[in-house]
Amino acid sequence: MSEPEFSLFLVKKSFIDKADDRFKTIMRWKDVDLFRQPLSFLFPADAHDRVERLLDRDDVSIFQNVVFPRVPLRLKTGGYINFDMKLVTKGPDERQLDFYKPGRADEANTAQSTEAAAPAADMYSFFNFVEDLLASPFEDDLDLTMVSMDALRDGSDAGLTDEEKDSARTEFEANLQKHAVGGKVGKLDEASYGLLTGTGFDEEAFDLEMQNVAARLNIAPEKLALKKANMAIDDRDVAPEKLHQALHQARGVFVGEIEDEHGIEKLTGVLDGIEHNRKLIQDAIKKYKYRTSPRSVSDNVASVSIALLQQGKVNLEGQIRRPDEIIVLADHPDISIEHDLAQLEDLIRMRVRKPADEREKPDYYELCRSTMIQERFIEELEAMLTRHGEEASRVGFRIKGMPPVRRGGLHWDALNRLAAKGHPIWIDRFGDAVVAPEALKCLMGGMIEMPPPLMKKLAGHFDGKEMMSQLVATWQAMNVRVVSADLPDYDMKTLAQELGITIAVEDAPEALAS
Image (cartoon, rainbow, N blue to C red; front, side):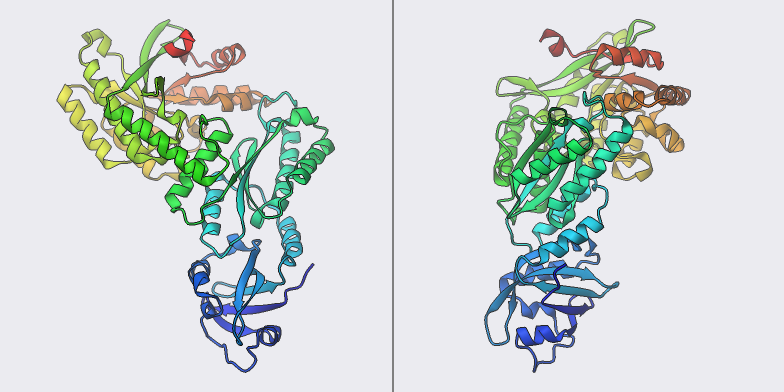
């Protein structure tokens, strides 16, 4: 392992406690007392802010395996010399900066990141790391590299058992960490990962390594179904909010949740695409080119429709689509609230024109979770109901992607407020019935949805069906209807019936017509 050329020892986050003799000799600071001097004076003016922001953090552990390349360090006699730099935490307020000749820190970094290999981070933690790294003294070129392996997906024709998938994930993640800046890898979905790659990333060698890992695991290359995409981080000063919007958008395109017409090759291109799509949605709302699209929610035993699921759609260049097909709507609360309020106004206005017997059947509007937490939404919803003379109990909300109930937070506070006002609630946190039943009273009289991926995953376990049946019974005992939606095939629809899930969302009229 390469040894550093010299080290600086810091206290109170960014003040020099001592410098080793090699630093004083190489950088000509032998005759100067550096004790308690602020570190920033050793860096050029254009690097001050980034160094200060880095060292001012209370927790710098996320950077422990990051090599900051070619950091300029001041010579006492004038000028600067570039070194690769590593930041090491020694105590609550004690840090150590190790400096290497350019390129020499890579061996140490690879060895340490391999030794410290940890499971991949969740997507949000990983994207926070990307933001933090861009605000740091890391000045090398960066790409967001996204990799997926279909062999890891539930229901993949690779035919791996759960144990084999776990083993494969461990090996794949370890291999990804070797190529990732800072050894940081984030999970984008069950079979996809994100990592930052820098100058010198060898894509061909990387692909070969991944194929070799698959071969060791007896996964045929065609069944591995390796897919990869790179997004160049070509704007280092983008605002954090815009950065996260772009990262989520690129991830959505890569995993197939967002339709791509603009490409994800560059960060600036993704940002331009987001602005284009935002304008399409805003223009459609402004010109009243929107409507709700109803889907029947039916009780298959009684053969009756018990509710309608209403999904807000807009006319986008001649196509009637949901906004979340082209942007990650939850990242754009200004658009989501305008879209949802416009659609709800129309929905409630049309409801009160129905015959009394038809009005008994509630409408569940598919609400964006970023709309739900805005105070303006609650105020305007109440005003709409009063204006049109409609009861809250007849206007329910389906909210997808709620955080775990035990985490609580703004979204659960908002959900409880809606339920307290009498609105029926429909969410997809099916597994939470055994986690915190007391916190789920807001769902009484509403619905819980079993997401198809969860149903498919549990069905593959030896006792999965029994587990699901027990959960279905638990929800029903809480006076919450269990509903299935968008099941991909006949086998899963049959499974839903076997589990006692008798309520289902019928295909949308547009889907039937196509």
